[in-house]
Image 1 (cartoon, rainbow, N blue to C red):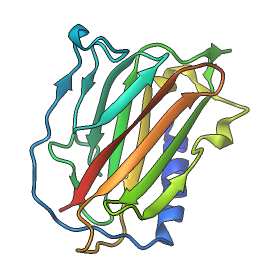
Image 2 (tube, rainbow, N blue to C red; image 1 turned 60 degrees about the vertical axis):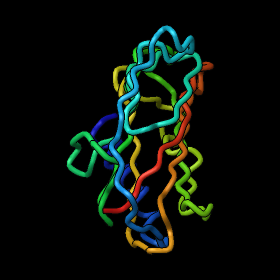
Image 3 (cartoon, rainbow, N blue to C red; image 1 turned 90 degrees about the horizontal axis):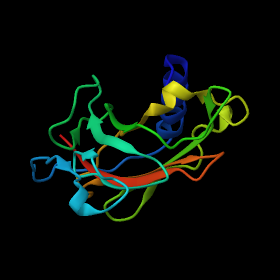
Length: 183
């Protein structure tokens, strides 16, 4: 994703989240495990490395890896973040997105909920501004989505982020979810 696209997306999410009340609590810390997907798994994720306990499915697209990074863009060893700090989801792909004239036409959605089901943010198409112009095809190989909490509430155990990235010109799709807690 280009720097202007990352900035635009970040501003969009910050704008949405600034009017929301967030709830979260500090819970039991767990080590995050990397799960290499092998040919024995017999899924479209063969060969991918999935970290941070991300539940993920891919169809029509070759996923290399999925993992989380902190506000400083350093890999997370645990799914923890601080109030006001972003948590980034990275999806690294190899093949599968349709390319037309050096562009890819992707959609991306995120839904952030509390552990008790309260919807905090529902962004149905984050890349809608690029529907006609598309994104440079090389930039669609690494897709970054982020979430940030501005307030914490001890009554909530954790947050769940559900995401979906899809090809608007083809059948490729990556969807899944991950959870995180506040430090």
